[in-house]
Amino acid sequence: MRSLPVLIGASLLLTGCIGDHSDLELFVTTTKAQHVARIPPLKETPKFEHFAYQAELMRSPFVPPSRELTEEVIDTSKDCLQPDLKRRKGRLETYALDNLRMRGTLSEDDTIWALIESADSNVYRMGVGEYLGLYHGRISNVTPQYIEIIELIPDGSGCWAERPSNLELSGK
Image (spheres, rainbow, N blue to C red):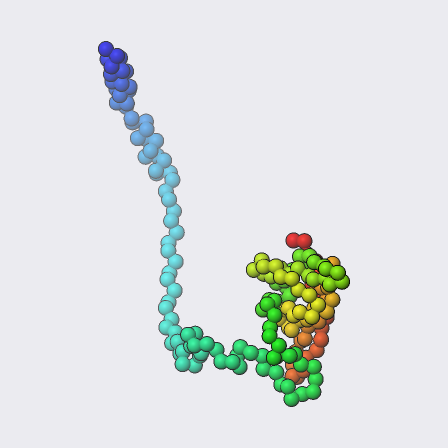
C-alpha cells in the first residue's frame, strides 16, 4: 500500500519531462552559431638539421679523466708563495666560501671552534689552522661573530698571493 503513492508521484514527475523543448533547442542553436571557437593554426615544424657527433675528438664520459685535468698543476720551480699540495684536503675544501655559513661557536677553556654549515645542511666544527673553501683557505682566527680566513689565490704567473676573507655569523 505504501508503494502506490510513491509510484504515482514518480509517474507524475516523469510526465513533466515530456514537453515542448523547442525554446531549449532554439537557445542551443543560437549559442552555437554566435560562439564559434577560433583555433589558431599549428606552427610549422622546424627543419631538422643533421649534426655529426665526432666523439673521437673528445674524452669518453665512461673513462675517468686524466690526473692533469683533476689535480692542480703548480709550477714549483719558482721561489714564491705556493700551497702545500701534499697536504690532505679538508672536508670543507670542496665548497666555495659562498656556500658555507657560520652558525655559531663552541668553546672550552681558551679554545674556540666555529660551527659551519655546508650547502648540504651538514654542520662541522672547525678550529684555527683548519682549511676550508676552494682556494686553500686556512682559518687564522675564530671569534663569536666571525671567522678570519687567509686564502691563497693564484696570480697567473705561477705564484700565489694571500687574500684575507671573513665568514660572518649567519642567523638564517
